[in-house]
Image 1 (cartoon, rainbow, N blue to C red):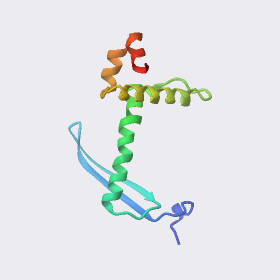
Image 2: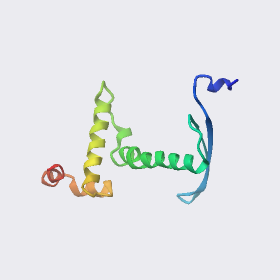
Image 3: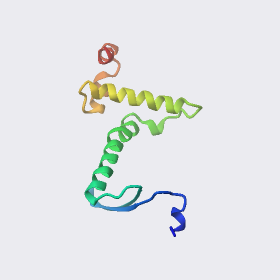
Image 4: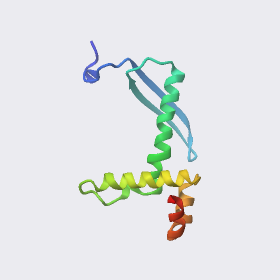
Length: 122
């Protein structure tokens, strides 16, 4: 019998526990994260998948939140937040496709210059 907290999760085949220990911003940290999976894999395979997930988090969601201030947006009605999120993702993809590795630097370089912005989508 499955534990009560997992009774609604069908097909669970693995429970993964990841410990992260290190220094960030001069402070020591110890973090424990748990994952569930419908697959049976080796530890290196799960590690690669988890790192891939966090790569997406760091490249997209973190940039949208920190650089583009998505979480500070005061727009909350109807579909507007989702629509603006899509527009931000498109903008990030256009910048990356034009070899801008730093979104912050690109933002500063392109701000208030419509001609530079238009060259990105031509």
